[in-house]
Each structure stands twice: as structure tokens, then as C-alpha cells.
Length: 412
Image (cartoon, rainbow, N blue to C red; front, side, top):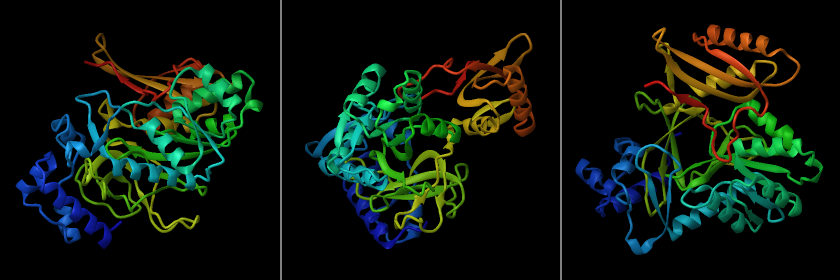
């Protein structure tokens, strides 16, 4: 999607504001001679930014306003390397709440709804973002945060929550608990707003059927405000994103080449009006595509397709590059296999070779050994890797209140 004249003006304003500061990016752009953006060609000269930049600038090197204008900081939920610290101005916080309220409205949520908020609060952007958008919409916020499933369900029943906000992992756990306890007829949920991690179609169906609700994918990341920069509508064909606040490109993750609408690649985001920590051409590592054309719902906002995974989620076994979504695509086709799986990569010293151990939860009357054989054969023919497959009963693998770790590499 080509950058518009209005978006170019906003980027030019961001660049001029940055180079007038001694921030990390202000110094970088001055050194590179980038002082104004008047055309798409100028825009393409802006180097990609990344999480490495933000870690190099730790703690507040990317801050582009005086301290007295910063009203809040957030930090990414990642667990590797230095944390990423993002400062927000009063306007940043207000803009984020406006985007989030727009997400709720796009999902058909109104001020008559009661929104049950399970994502975490604190430095993480999730919980407070869901709450700010809820309050701006005028709906009732039920700020539970993660954990204490007994209390979650009790409050859900007593307060008659109509909207669940959660990671897909926790939504699955709540769905299983509600049905295990036989309390679904006491639950008043109608919609679920789910974010923070990629989830398979099989997992989506399991949650939707288990809770009897409509599900909406919400998109965002801490570096770019947080969740709330995009959501799918009732037509469920891609996520509308708010191009008056952000500009999105899709690039080839290897070459950096900008790809045309419809082609899959890495999402790159430019913040158009962010004050505290503007980011230009930020590489998210999320894989998707811009869906061409307008949506049947009538919204003029452009659309991203469902996030297919992350370019940095790749793991290698027997010389083959693999992604978690390839595992999920195989399991989608296997009768009796659920959405829950775990991959363990290890090295056998005796045989001097790497092995892939795949544990999958199974259901139904089908024999587990037969299911394991089919999964193994399907992997061998489809991907060229033969895993060791173990099928376990539903509920065997651990459930998470946040994000579920699917792949663990035990190799040195």
C-alpha cells in the first residue's frame, strides 16, 4: 500500500521533530543526512528500525520529548536481552485509548457491555490498554488481570460479563474449565477479544465452540502503543488497522524489499503521530499481508490478514527450516488431534543426531498409536522431517494464563 500525501506530511513532521532532539534516532537521522521527507523515495531512505535499536538505546534513549511530558512508561513482555522501555506522553495515552475504543466498536461492543479483562497489568501494555479503551467507550470494565481462575469464573457469573479479553491460551483454559465444571449455562459471554499470540484455526474453533461466542483478533505490540492498533470486523476477513495513526508496509524479511498488496511478508510499522517514542519503519517480525480492496463491512480502513507467525520463530532440525504454523497446519488435518502441542528439540549423543519430539493432545475414540503414526507420516511427506510423536489425553500439557511456549530447544 503506497504511502499517502497526508501520511508523508506526518512522517516529515516526525523526522523534523526527531532531528531537533538528541534522542537515539535524532542523532542517527542527522548523521545520515535525513532531515525531511517530501516523497515516497525520501521515505524509503529511512533505515528500518528494530528491537536491537531500542535495546541499544536502553533505558530512555529513544525518548523524543522532555521528561516533564512523559506520563507513563511501558516495557515489552519479551524475556531475552535487555528490556525495551517505551515512554508515553499524555496525547500518546489518549490516542491509544481512542484506537482501542475504535477496536471495541468495530467488534460490535457497546457501552452496555461488561468487559472482563484478564491480560496482565503493570509494565505490560495489555491490561491497561483494554481498560482505557473500555472506559472511553463507556462500557463496564472488570479489571481482573491474569490468574486465579476460580475467582475469574465467579466474577464472570456474578457480574454477568458479556465480553472476554484474553490471550488465546487463557481463553482456552477458561473454556475448558467452564465446560468441565458444567457452568456454561451460567456464563453470559457473547464476544471474545483475543490477542498477544498467534493461534491456529483449530484452537479458534475450540474456544468459539467451548464458550459459544464470537471471536475477534486484536493486534498490537508494546513498541507501537500496545494492543489496539487493529482488529477484525464481523466479516472476519482480516484486521482493520488505523492508518490515521500508523502506516504499514510489508517487506521481504530477507531482502528488505517492499512487497505489493496481497503478498505475504514481514509487517513494518511507522507511527505517524506518536510523541514519546516515535518509531519509523519498525520491523515487527510478524508475518502477514495487506488484503487488497475494501472490506464488505464498508469500513475504509485497510486490512491485515491473520498473523501467520513470526520471522524469528523459525527453528532448524535436520537442515530443514520450520515454523510453528507448519506444525499447526499438519495437526489441522489430523482427526482427533487438538490444537495443543509441544515441540522439544534435543540431541542424541549416542547417535550423534538431533531429534524432534512432538507431543500432541488427542481426543475421541481413535487409537493414539494410529494417530501418532499418521502425524509422523504426514510430517515426513509434507515437511521432510520425521518427528517422534507422542499423543496424550486432553489437559496433559500445561495451560498458560499468558502466552503458551510451544517450542523448546534443549540443544547446546
